[in-house]
View 1 (tube, each protein chain N blue to C red):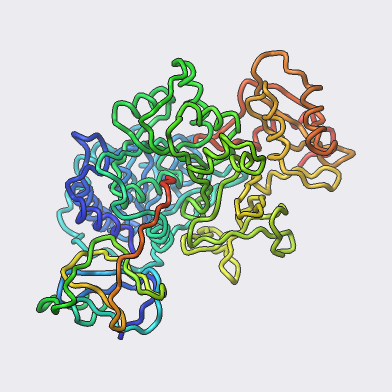
View 2 (cartoon, rainbow over the protein chains, first blue to last red):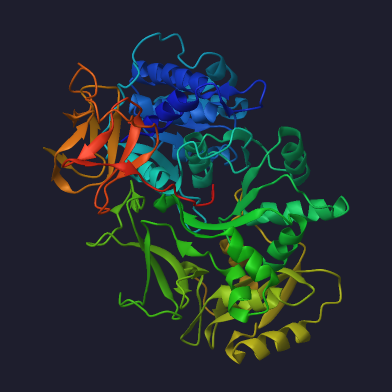
Length: 507
Length: 101
């Protein structure tokens, strides 16, 4: 198996259709195939171990991704917004590489001996770099165990690790979840997640196989997103929660007129505040919403909540159906999910534990510490959650974020959900800070509308819906919560910022 | 007979059809155009599909048997039609999973 198999099929089935870019000037599948071949010639003739891309979204992304698969070297997208020292530390771990990069990082990466840099515009103009030969159609390696992509985890909890995704994982994911040429000729998807995010990688692959034109938005801005939707005739889009929050606000600023052209909008990559998704369902009244749950280590989506469940939740009076809006839906065909307790025992429906996942797309492997799959192929996600009686999965957040107060484990998610249900609270994060008496105590950091949100009222709300042990010791109001580039809440930053509220031993 | 296991690739010897196995079932007599299929890239194309086995194989379509134990995906289209142990394989129902990324 090889990712090039997917592009070869697209090029042979719909060669003249535009694969990426605008309708009039984009690259067709045949042109993308040819440029991937040219890039493969460059990679092979350079004799490197990896194909790095350190740049925002451009046509260079699919060219480098497929070109590297053709050449048989891992594709390694790096976060171009990292501070120079952090970027060099990561790039230095990759080995010998050709790095396609923006102007800002060109000299930085060139300082590493093993890295040959090429500026993005130069690469786009001549992907082969003067090498005419070295890659022939069909001569890519079909070994399913070849490494296709190395993705550095965001490192929100420590030093970034490189997740290993082999050809078999990504190809299995696409063949298992996407219908070949399933997209109509007029369909286009807007990719606004950066190339170094798993969703950015998966979007290239699934769109190519579906035959859906890719439109790229390099720097997310809610107004640019809305304008691009309209200008480019975009029908599909994937966003992370922070993006949808800003899109909803921007649409409301523009008068709250619904956006009708979007047929399908998927979201994932973090917890979606309920008021945001509820408003989005109103602003996109005829759009099919999909909540997708997945991890880098699982080749993107492993469970999804489909369009019908969203609308049922929106209009239903039944509590279980309304609650589904907070669910990530059911596992994909070919993916199994179980919930286990700390002893590794499978838990019944309704009980909270760690989410384990198994399937052909599940890689669960890092370059630094090998495979994390157990003997039966199960991958521990380190996410907490539960399955309801109908098999809907509810994710409650990273196990690393669990607050342990007086020996009692509490998920920040349950406290946040209640806090956000207060009409004035837009977003909230619950963290634990050291406490001499309880080990940890709860600090709730909240973003509120208006200035006179009453902390006592908020405490009462949490006390009435949860146990009194969940009532925060401190409630702090802020203008916004810290997120990384791809919308992940930075709890580590909050724990540092509010450590002074703690009074116990630190560290 | 070929070993039909997930990920294995086979080609027709009488048309351009190539397939990858999605769901395998061990040793199977896999044919295309009436002639045995062989490991992809190991043979040249010679002759043409036999009458009765020339309905064609469509690019990107999944083909399966009645029992549901075999599923193959056409990675290259061709004029021959595919069969396993003498049973014609038919196009499997398209998946209707919504786009998620």
